[in-house]
Length: 388
Ligand SMILES: Cc1ncc(COP(=O)(O)O)c(C=O)c1O
Image 1 (cartoon, rainbow, N blue to C red):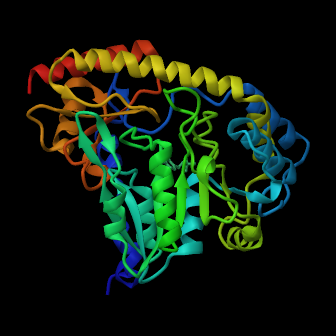
Image 2 (cartoon, helix red, strand yellow):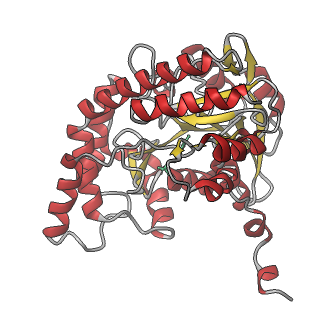
């Protein structure tokens, strides 16, 4: 028997990322403009790295609080206070080893073998895959698409609920579609969760990358204290900290001890010097975020203008997050197209096949990048489109 055959079936079934296959194909190409990953091109700003470096130099290298240092949890409460206009308590926050780790802990807490979890598709693939690893069944509900853009039919979510359903995973603004739930939709989803006794896992990681007025609508705007909602979030996107692997959960204070235990038996906590950097991000980073969002807005408009002018690219202008999810007339197989775009346009895109049901015909372009490079990439894509 092969060694590998003795592993758990769920571990063996964990899918390889559909984005990575294209990255492997193109990563060493001279002059390739990589727009396939979900991150910007700027390194973490120095007010954050300096705070972490100071803490490291000061010997903050020991085991620390599993649920996060009090200073960071207090800073999270202040940050929420500023952005959501309510009062929040330190006890509502738990520091995690990335947004992905927050998602994994949420699944650990809510769903296992035999359970179902519903998510909206097309979707960033990691939630469904992590649910699968835990033994739960991820059930996609495909967003509707019309000339007006993406929308969520809450009746479709209701029809997908079974006695085994434990949670609804709602990512708004969405990676990859940019769909951003309005307050009415959030209320309808919350009502459904309340009547069917379900948890909501709210992934509002891109809430500040919103191109309307101010941040995107949030479950925080419509919920009551006793609602069963786990917010999963991350330092990755707002503060250009993707490589740090620091995130958080916000939920009911009564769950603190459970999550502290789950963290103890997974990562055992986030390095204390990194948490000092995270405190600086929260307390001093609002200006940096505002600049990033304006830069991303300009980038979005530039890419939409150039690709829109081809007459071959179809998309709705994303209202949130930093991705353009588009189809190209005549292209149905996005995986083959993404390889061809690497070969002939020297641009790296993520194929829609990586984002599950409803995404197959699309390509995802991350526009959180320098304008001159984006302009060059969009022009190369426009040229490529003329040949297909
Ligand atoms: C919707 C969404 N949720 C969560 C994450 C996880 O972020 P991280 O693990 O980098 O903190 C990502 C990253 O791409 C994402 O797009």
